[in-house]
Length: 340
Image 1: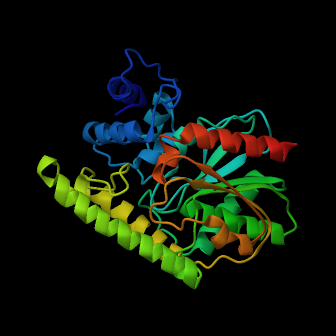
Image 2: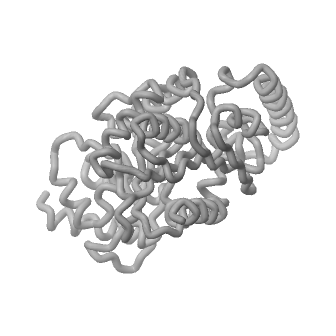
């Protein structure tokens, strides 16, 4: 298939997925309202039309019909780079943001769209999601992988780092290494990010286990009370009330890749013990605690020279969805304060 015929085949797919009456070959996917969900649908249709099962995160590499058609001309396995430009900016110094466990930078697209800053924003994509390279099984290796890419793009500080969930641990380790090299960290923001429960203090560990036990009991009671009204399989019901982790609608190969990345990330989380950080951490906590400690200050304050906390409504996953505007507003303020 030639590039022009690929463009002709892609345009109606984009129109259907994005519900647009017309799409130009140079229109940007995200400017047209594209989301992580619509990217998944887009690549499902691409798999049917082109016979290629590709990771949806590639839309960040090729966000227009023209660039995606060109990418599809390459018959070789397609690697996703460690840094993906999620939003262009006028300033020279970029912002680097890391996604959560087993996810891709696509899950950050809604939040990135709500951050008001002149700086370009790059998403740090975990290795292995493309199915080409093996994923890392340690936070230290993840940090070194992304730090190499960051240093190619920005040789000197100040650096602006944001990490969501597991990505917060990765950005913390990056900040540790940059600080040790004498670089300035203008912003290190962690979004509901915690070490594994095995690395919590005895008190925090006990409190978390107690709350999780109560949550399981309540979940069982609630399930028993509401079961007659449920028509969907249990595997499709999200425990957190906002996220479906079922991989059943994916192709087998893509599911295996995603599960391998997720398993590697879990192993990295369990092994990582944060060190004392001689700098400032801005922490954003979800108002509704799910599987994490209630008090981030008790977890992090003794591990940072300065630790500031602000709370947003909703739960952990809602930070990237229902509350992305609130979180984006906070991050916009943090960036503005860091600039001044």
